[in-house]
Structure formats: structure tokens, C-alpha cells
Length: 484
Image (cartoon, rainbow, N blue to C red; front, side):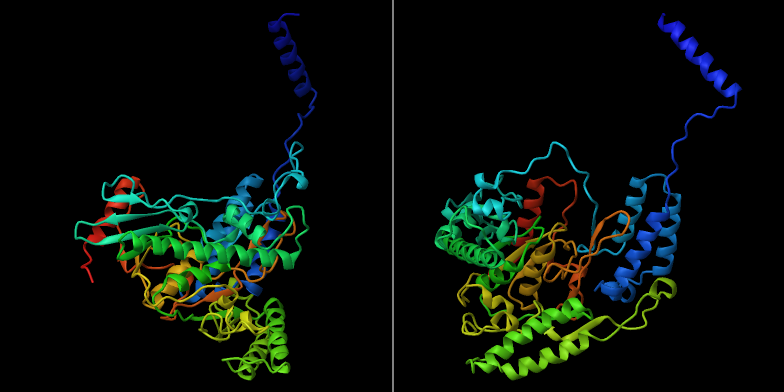
């Protein structure tokens, strides 16, 4: 049978089928009902443990009832799963919170294979992998020379000579996470005398993280000192395109600052997630009290603060009506008891709490090895719209203590994130994972850090700027600052 005859035959059979009222198979219509159910679950979850919901209402003046209605309408109009996902994503994005995120389940791949754990290093198995992102590029300037040091592998740097005679040492921090520096982790493994094939439990993992973090801090300080030795009279720390990281961000600003840094206040949510954390902290402090541990901080006073915090964390607060009325009937936040990292005190001298079981409960940065340096170089910190989370904390801490001049553009706006893994939120039907902050970091002026960091010197960077243009604009701004 020829191709033409086959086409005619198929056309005839199709016509015959219609003539006999035989319906062709229909594609199953998209059902928005499960997505609407997931959306209502999301609203309930946000009511019970989203720390920045009050900020959305009181600072951003969001019309949450209208947002809810618009989102419901768009979900009903969705024609497929991808449309529905985009609606949910847009709903979350409207809050302008870098830590309010959704992750969709990935389809299982038949070809995906897990690497043989016997062929991986301990650091590889623990998730340490390079995640370097380039920052500002001064290589096009004759006045810039790179510094070739061992530390430059992790913290590239160089000397920038300005036309006004100033000499700026530039140092790049691409990520504030130990897990982004696998070579340093390998050194920590050797220092700790761990076997590459050893099983590393939670205690081992914590020990490895701290050891890696301390090595990173030491390397960062050595790089800063090498820049000083090369003639730098000020230090520019580049944290543009730095997506944040871990608690290690507590150490670098304190090690690079010429003055002691004091944390600002924070708030935590009234939720069992925080009740448990606070109870664990109180248990540590009571152990130190029982053992008559010597402390520069009143342990009895610290225990009293935690007891009050625990009591407040248990107070009920039903905010579900906000999606209908636009008003909050109560506050889910406990304020003015703790400091930025959940600390009980705003400041403690390095190593002063080492003898205490509760040292990190009192002042969280005390878990890291760093030294304060009153002779440290004056600091500039370069930020941009791609500076997030822990990197924003780095800039905010220095700015609030008047320990650095922030240059660049307003940062992304993530603020406080998730403590101890956060509060798991899985939507029933789509199985989407939603992450939302359970704490709020406040600035020295009382504003929420989720607003982003506004630089002291704004640089008019544009999306279409080349890397040369970005560095040129920054250099022009630095040259306008008179020498001290």
C-alpha cells in the first residue's frame, strides 16, 4: 500500500468513527483541587511558623487577603502542573524574603548511580566540594597586582593602587561555608588524625566542621597580613555574589575587625522547635552551675533569661485569620531576650568561655578559634544584590559596630534563616519542601535584616555593566574618599 493510500484509508476510518458517534480518546483535564489543598496547607504552615509574616504585614504593608484570593484564582486557571508550580513560586516570591523557598521533588532517574563510598574521601562523603564564585575583577587594571600566597587558593587577593596614593588590599570571600573548601577539610582530617574510610557520626561531623572553620579563619587572617606586608593601608573584602553559608560567618568579621564586635538583638518564634532548643541550652547552663564552673558571665542570670524565653516560646498565637482580615491578632515573635545567633550575651572575649559546657549557649561565636586585633587594617566591604544570608550578617555586623564601610548596592535580603535544620514543611499532594525562617535578626537601628544591607557608599552598578565597568565604578568611589 502506498503512503497516499494509507493516509486516505486512515481518513476514511476516522470519518467512519465519527459517523458512528465513536469519541476519540480525551486528554485528562488538569485538576487544580490538590494544588488548592496544598496552598491552604501552606497558608496554615506560614501562620504557625513563618517568622517574617509580621514584617510582611507591618513593614511591607502586603494585602494578604487579596494575595490569597489572586493565588487561588490563578491555581484554578492553571492548565498543567508546571503552571501551578509557577503560581506557588510567585506567591512565595511576593514576600521578598530570600529564605522563603520551595523545592519540588525530582523524578527518579533510572540511570542515576550513587558513587561507591569506598572510593570517596571522608570530606567528599561529608559533602565538602568546591563552590567558588568569582567576585569583582580588577585584572584589567595596571594598578592591580595579584598576591601569590598559599592562602590565595581559598581567598584570592591583590594590591590595588589608587590615583590618590592609597593602597588597598583586596581579598575575596566567595562563600561563608566550611563545606565549600574541600582542600581545607582534607587538612582538618589530617590534623584530627581521622581515617579516610572512617564512619563520621554527628559528633565527628561537628568536630570536622569546627576544625575546618578554624583553618579557614587562620588562612584569612594570614592573607590579610600578607596584604599589609605588601603595602596595603586598608582592606577591601569582596563578598559580592556570596550566597551565604554557615555559622562560620561569626568568626571572620571578628578576626578582621579592629574593634570588638557586639551582636544586635534577635527574635525567635513561639513554637516547640524553639522550646526544645532553649531547654537544651538551659540544661547546659545548669550543668555548669552544678559544677561550680568559673565564668565571666553570671550563669544564674543566664539561666533566668532562658527560663523566661522557654515560657514565652510556649505561648499560643493563632494568626490564621490574617489571610482573611489582613490583620494579625497576636505576635508570634519573642523579642529582646536573645542576641543575633541565639546568644544570651551580646559579646564575650575570645577564649574567655572555653571552660564552660554552655559556652556556645552564652555566646555562639565562642566555638571558633579567632583573635581580636586592634591593629587590623581599616575595612571596606563590597556587596551587591547577589550577597545573601550569612554574607549579609557579615556586612551588617561590621556596619552596625561602625567597624567597616560598606560599598556596593543593596543586598538580596535574606536575614535570619533556619535554626537546627528549621521546621520541616512538606506539602501533602505535590510533596514540595518549603523552607521558611524561624527567627528574625534585627539591626542596631531596630530594622529587620531581611530588608537587605544598604551600603554606606552606593555604587551605580547596572545589569549590563561589564566586569571592567563594575570595578571602575568601585575604584572611582574609593578614590573619592580622602586618605585618613
